[in-house]
Length: 157
Image 1 (cartoon, helix red, strand yellow):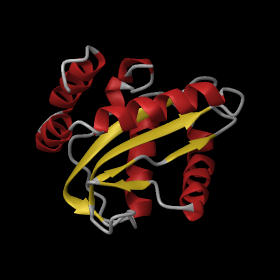
Image 2 (cartoon, one colour):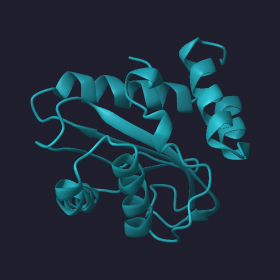
Image 3 (cartoon, helix red, strand yellow):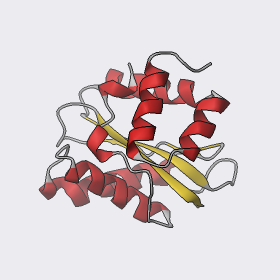
Image 4 (tube, one colour):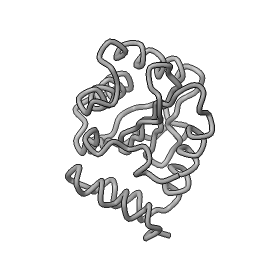
């Protein structure tokens, strides 16, 4: 699975305004709503589901990266977005560091394979220090999209 299979170009955010975990999640889910990827009447339910998943253990995986995610009945296919916080957000990461790179995923409950393949792709790409460094330095949604395309085409690592 590639980033192009699930990341909504229109929902990518190069500059998060949020300064905490819930605010970050709200801002990213709002980006998916603005891009037409989720239904407005499901907005709060999706946020609640992601926050409930965070209670099980932070999706801040370390090295300045978090992958908040959930399964939700309101989506019929995997949707996601990417956002960057230049200041960093306290996401209760495993390494205690703030998070700059966020990959948010929402998938249908009956498609666990897609969910797992997306998580695997994200974690594989994020093991590449150059990819992470370039993403953290990206100044626009277009730059982020270009880096995701390059990663899809195996131009890193």
